[in-house]
Length: 291
Image (cartoon, rainbow, N blue to C red; front, side, top):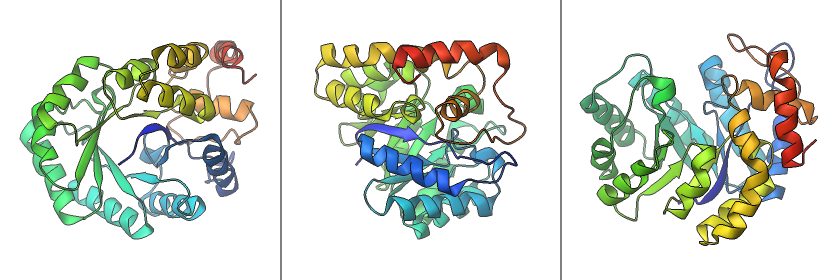
């Protein structure tokens, strides 16, 4: 359903932590103009963990409204409570989102059967296309390929965002789930190779900073043009790695503020980028041609 470079969009905030909807609108226009394939709203990079339920739904609703059917919107609606995830997913469907992205339940460490039952109930309760999201480095929970395959049999579970950075997961999931099941990379450093090996897209943090370049790189990789993809990707390698010198989205919000795209607001327990990393990020920005 979705292919290419998709942005895991930040949620712009004023210095007092309130959501800056004017900056959000400008970011959405920039991504549409730059060829971004889809917007992922209220994912990890969008600080979903620090927004309350009303704010979460309002950001999704406003994003869909601002996008105005010009670019698909995928809403992050995962939670470690199944009932909360159902509520957020229903909210996203009512807001007109094109699909939902549901992270595996974090902190409570469910079994593989628990993961299956959790996602199965959400999918059966809310009839919107759903993408599984596996990021064990954040959740302490790893959805294994056989569990993904069980869930792929449910008609409105259409794909998975695999953020382990392990390219072997791609071939294993593809073998188990077939070509009709979409597999997206959630790791910018390995995203190019992921696409060349048969992935459908990259849900990217780097895309926040260089949307046109990421769109062009992903298009080349999907076309099998390794040389062009690598040429575009090489100057972005610093961003791919240095945007994670502190917990995402601390670095990417700092970079966007440096570029004048958003204010410097961020919510506790996240704090502004430590000064020791400022020059590190500036060098990555220079390499990418945005400073």
